[in-house]
Image (tube, rainbow, N blue to C red; front, top):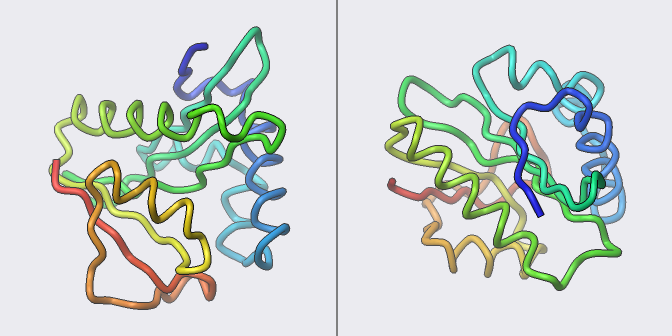
Length: 150
């Protein structure tokens, strides 16, 4: 398995994986549509799309959104349901954190939902802590904001 970064051929799968999990648990929001209809906007704004690929197939993905001079937001993490339970999300987390450090970021932020218990456990395992804020203006589903100092 390989991690690829900013490979345009992977962007369609990035969008499909994210649409699937969001629609399975929540409602696709305007902020989601903006990024998923045109994922290259992430790269154009200084961010990165990471994909986990095995034998040419994208099994999982996430994004690092530029979030200031020295920080990123970890966003849009998804793993194909047929490949869940294999530790792929851990590989994506590790690759994202490593990339952020290589880019000299001082922190990673993320937005999530208290309903996503497995995701929260994953984030905590990788050192993210919950911030006191409990909502975000761009996403109705996000009631947990987390941060990792790098």
